[in-house]
Length: 120
Image: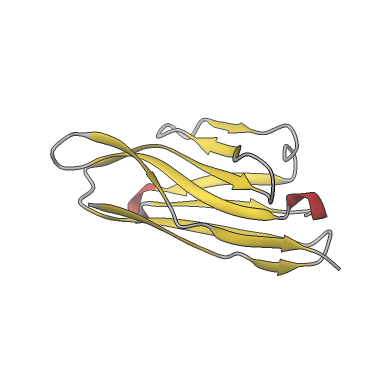
């Protein structure tokens, strides 16, 4: 079994910064693409940023230039550095990973979500 554990959410003023972390634990053989999604009240979950095992990245247009996704393969961890935060960034942020267990089966895993609130 694999678990993704997120941390780093909280309340921040507009223009501020937060860094989210997501660590993978369990029966892990290899971690492929990882990403961050968010879901605001009344809205659908959307992709914020993604990073491949080769560290190629992809961002939603709304966060380009403000957010940076990175990963530390030795720690099985993905990060999301969020700068110049805006009230519209307020949402529950979810970590996602395509992970192979030692049986070589690749599944899609989700974290439990962490709340980010941008407000003065």
